[in-house]
Length: 109
Length: 116
Image (cartoon, chains in turn brown, purple):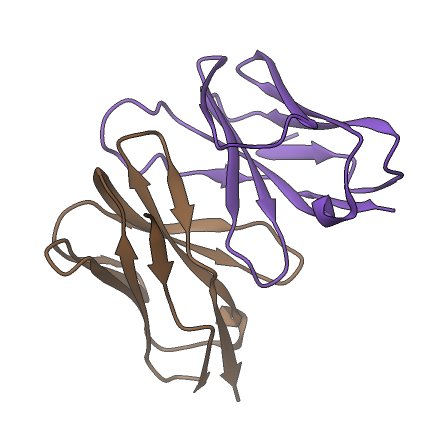
């Protein structure tokens, strides 16, 4: 079957670094994406990893290990505006996209 | 208008009503998607259209009927819904689904549907 696991909630302080993990199970894996969704807003794309390793985009980085079926999103220099839900999502070769349940990130002053 | 728009933003309907949700994208994409987002549950992919052809139907009940008249417009026709269908319905679009790329999806703001 298909499944994605990520923590339901994480709390961190402004300026800190936080890592949100995602483990997945799927067949025909293409890649792992990350999306951010603020309360009342639409999900917005953050990153995509198809190959093993770290992808960096400004304060956000995403990592993938295909052999471990594992990835993470790393947020550095946290800001209050980073408080949101973060979803990992896998794409497979059957035109299917599966999303995790989301991790609610609370950034405290 | 830019990005992905959805109308209406809020909808309350009875179980015997028929209504339609509309999605429009102004990004030049050729793939469009319908998702259902319920509280405390993952986003559920309902339908995928690529080049106006349905390429994925995720075992969605027949009371939900999609329509994609062209690459910029997507509809979700609703009839005889159940209270458990109350949720946020999100539309998204992306570039082509060919290849192994991210198919980075751009989401609309969603329609908050309440079935009474």
